[in-house]
Amino acid sequence: MSRTSLAGSRNVGLDVTAHELYEVRLGRRRDPNQKAFKYSPPHRLTAAAIPTGTTTSLSHFRLASFSSKPSTRNPSRPVVLSLQHMADIVSIYVFISQSLTGIKGLSEAKVDKICEAAEKLLSQGFMTGSDLLIKMCLRLFDLLLLILKRKSVVRITTGSQALDELLGGGIETLCITEAFGEFRSGKTQLAHTLCVSTQLPLHMHGGNGKVAYIDTEGTFRPERIVPIAERFGMDANAVLDNIIYARAYTYEHQYNLLLGLAAKMAEEPFRLLIVDSVIALFRVDFSGRGELAERQQKLAQMLSRLTKIAEEFNVAVYITNQVIADPGGGMFITDPKKPAGGHVLAHAATIRLMLRKGKGEQRVCKIFDAPNLPEGEAISFYSKHITTGGLMDVKD
Image (tube, rainbow, N blue to C red; front, side, top):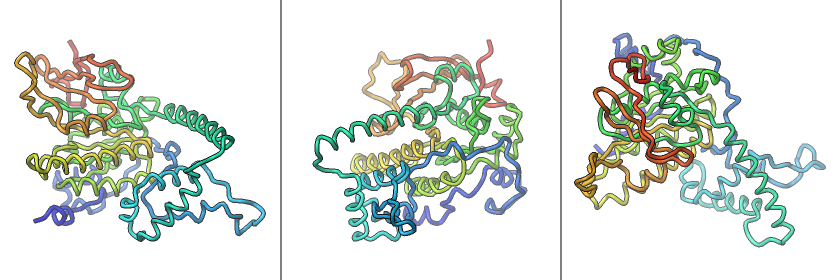
């Protein structure tokens, strides 16, 4: 069976909640798509924090509302472009034509007209000194908007105070956080804990939002969410209802899930996206050095999509990564392993965490790379005998 047919033969959309999957695993329901009773969310979820921006819907690519001609309702009043309109126009202008023609309903002729209209509105070309001065003032305004955007960053607790201090408060929104390490190092356990802590209100260091979970290795367990929710004093059924889950089987299926997820995030207040793991299907679907270049290109496209989702909807993207042996590490290196994915994944991830096994059942987290955090600091945060409620601090 081909890759495309394999992805198309299964449920491609993120329409199954973790609570529905939990009932299937308990034998209460045969079909995960069979809808269950509605549960009230554990806390009020507001959509006020969702920023405006670009979407993949066709309606946002219609430039009729962006025209500088007078309004038909009031001819004497010209149309004023809002920041949302300008963001949409810029996104159209920076898109390559091949990406736009892939949208249903857009032919090559329509794409050329759209790009031409966007170029006229943005005035990309020669300009006078006065226009350049105005543009510089607008760039200062954009810098102010960037500062305000950074202030909207939400830091989600990991359940461990020591790990939160290491991360400067928790997992950040608007960026990609990668956790890599060998098997049984705590990557998936951290993901399960974040599924619950993200739904906490902001004053409890949560995200006050929903969670999307893309599983490529089949390691998500909804019954694991129940004790973690009880630890935080939350309704387990409501927590599971606020987690949408999808199992990806090929790298194409994984990418298609991200395309459909953007539409859901535009309608509902999501705060976390988990991909566990981001590299597994690429290592299966591509083999040998002959397909390495194509694999890295497809991986870069998927990581670019994750970055756009994080910045557009102010969500935290948490991805797990596998490790590979490093024969060139040398005989004096105690742990000759390096993260998979190469430089493409290294440049895409904003914060990189290295998880490894420590003394006994302890786990150690080290800041491998981060633009605003000190590198090389390690801390023990996990011990097996106290993990009923998820990630916790080590108790001496």
